[in-house]
Picture 1 (cartoon, chains in turn yellow, red):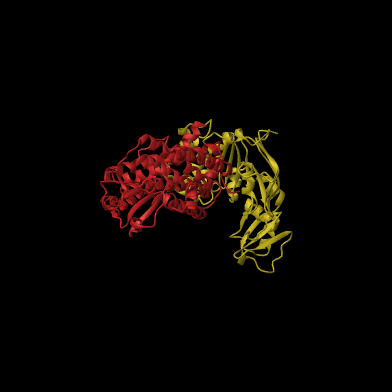
Picture 2 (cartoon, helix red, strand yellow):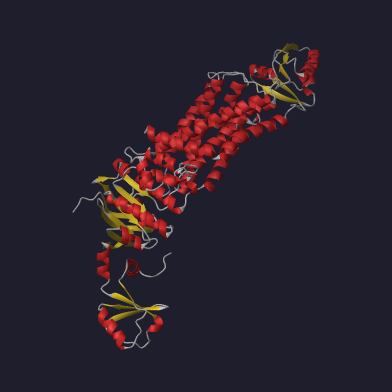
Length: 295
Length: 329
């Protein structure tokens, strides 16, 4: 088991009467991407900000390479906040120069520009960047000190599909450089694509933690057959399945696909529009955090 | 540390220079104000005669004349100095039965003709008249410095905090001390450069007489600016939004505008208000600037003003740095 670069032990954070984070412990190791998932208000951002040293825990501790967060951590941590503003009237290049000068050890500017593909808007004012350009710049600033540990708090929120995939590629590249990454996201496909391990939080607590595949296996043993709702009569009888009715489609959850399909055929159900799929992280997320709308 | 400080200092300077609105406002607001005053007070006509009295003022004869504003003075030299500048038309010492007037002053001449028939000994003091606009220029430049210091540092830091710039910087090795020092130095540079440009423009446009040393004035403005910027830091240290900052800054700036002798002499205020006025750094900067620019005094003569500014700069900076938080958790 590799030694953790960053370890959080029993983190608790109270805001007056609200307990935002309740006894959270986790570890980050080299070259490993840990995904922190949860519905709005689950305590993800408070947790990540305690790990970043931005928010002070009420109780518990965060250790960087075995020591309390201090100068070494500040020098070697790369942080991309959920919402970061940069100074007005400063260009992309000037922002990179500013942040590079704040750290003792830095990545050469040219390398940073190339890694994050900033060439085409290098002399543009920070205020005039598109969403994707802005996130690439913020990632570049987080990488300016060649960090050993990288925090990415919802890095692709609000981006279009191309920009999101572009950023995934960048994060994948960074991962191959051996950096420990902590990622929070609302996008389950992003978590599945980028994370080696997932931590799912709700009401300030960790409610599930494992690799994406293991979590899916733990929670789902069935496959899903999807048919248009109109294709299934109301009085249909199928053995050892669960039915989920939606407005336009019905999902048949079964442990034995062959048996279920034979039963459907025996009852003359049209299978022309049959779709078979496995459970996804979206299903898992809804399964363990519930369906109700969060405030 | 120096590298980080320099980086933040330069970033702030670039931001200010490229913000055309702020730049133009810093330069043109004081200029416009001074030019407006130059136009409004171009003939300096005063309705009343101004007579200063040293000693007990009798309530008979000449001293019962109407349309005279009487100014009791306790320091004869101060009174004589104001005669030379045409700020008083006549100075009477009732103890020695003497009076002084400026032969270049029309009002002083006529008053002297009346008083010389009453057995008072006549003395003259020569000197060039101080126009109101000349008197008010040091005050307007210091007022501009106050706005630039309080809003340029206080407001900017509060905006940085509100939009998250400070939170991002907190996540770097930059210390609060380095950040605040860079902000102070950047604003100090801005204030000194804009004040010099305003001064040069004023001197060029309205032929302003400068009797003291330019270096002394620069030193006074430098120390005075540090005091005002540090005052701005106190309010920037915790406030989380611009709306509250606006209210607080108004609460600070208005008393200083009214009581610091920018528009009228602090000497004309009630003694208790004078005491309050002398607790405000702007009063000391304005008095020091007038002493250098109008009276030709040096740093030694305005040492009290300078010391007050140094003391308040250190005190305000210490309080501001102690209270400073990057973000509201």
